[in-house]
Image (tube, rainbow, N blue to C red; front, side, top):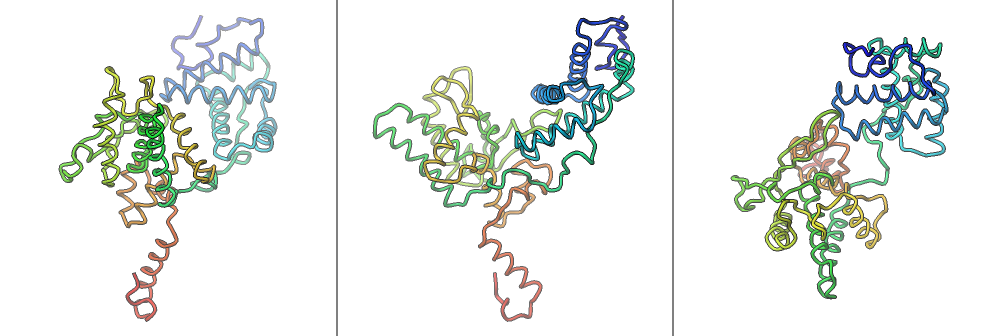
Length: 373
């Protein structure tokens, strides 16, 4: 009889006591994964995509070892890490997600609250143990661990990118080809991503009614504030919302022109989605990345640049203009200012200006620094 008083994820809720299975080891492992999923969904309230990802990572570890959790050892884990590094060549941040999954799964199995130690001991004469420790996992030594090639784009590069996006619209119109509306949509979407410092998922999820008037800046009309409803969520939480103040008149003009002249031609009756495909569906992040890649490659820019670099550029360029870092942090929705700092890669001109100001304060009597700005 199942123990209905046990906490979610317990062995007693997944396995009948004293019952043998045709393939006992595989059945117990499957029950472990089911219990762990139940624990993540219920106790931690994680998103379904996160749950599926961690289950996949544990399954990969099991397939690599060709053994079961009650027999896993730290040596097995070390060999798998070497495989991920040397053979699959995964990034440190990706490897860390695998390590977190294994560590949490082993902690779950070893916990006295869920009964897996007793279950494995009685069935197999062995029990699970923690195999992922601080001494055999990747240390988080620096804030940014992304690809070194990922960087903010310069103002000139962004101007070239947006100009080329506009040229694609003109090319379609001049050649009387289909696709002019889609090209106009893509051009405006790139301007909105940079103009408001959005993540690409935040951008594709926008609706027309996410723009609001800012009474302090009536010159922007109904486009003074952008309400981001699908901000990046923390583990187990709903998407974070934030209000982004409009700062660039040229970006406001672009989205206003799109909403008034283009969007009414492509909108569907049952949706207020801002970016609509020719099929009447919401534009996807995949399509956005594809468009950005085509423009980037056509201009001969670095392959490492991605649409997310527009967000990096937004942060960097505001900091270069002397905008308060706390305000920039609020604009892009970072919980910590240190996160905003890793997005910033200021230009040489800005660095020199800051250096002169620092020297002027440190050496006020020096004739070389008098009047420097």
